[in-house]
Length: 207
Image (tube, rainbow, N blue to C red; front, side, top):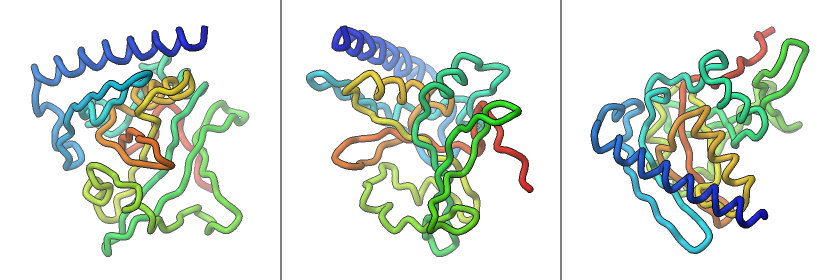
């Protein structure tokens, strides 16, 4: 049953990709330049997996806000069930990249984004990321970011190995927008997208 479910998810992913490519052909360049990167569509299908690389910049990503809790209830429910990896990233004027991790937490007023801070991290959670070049971002992350303008990076496995991978990918694309590129981590390819605001749920007010 599990293998059949994964096969069905892969089939839907490939069908969806065909539609996206067709739309991109009909409106080439509509969203290009949203963050200074021209994304390309380059699907690759291997035995038991469907790999998607840079489908294109969606309209919501171009706006920089991602899904809205009022307009995209299904996508936000999916995000609440299975969230992709999410980090806020910034580049200083010297080109050095820092990041801090975010996750969704339930509180008295409902779901909210919160910073995940390790015990060794500064109070605000920001830490340098000298390993970024080793992750082989394509397009390079430093080209996507503008100095002193933090953005939110969401990522999920680009190759479907199990149901969880597919759910993370669908959650990322539904809430944050289509992937603009890929990177490598622990021998696997991940699709990533960058937006200006966190989707669906707001961070708690700053004290």
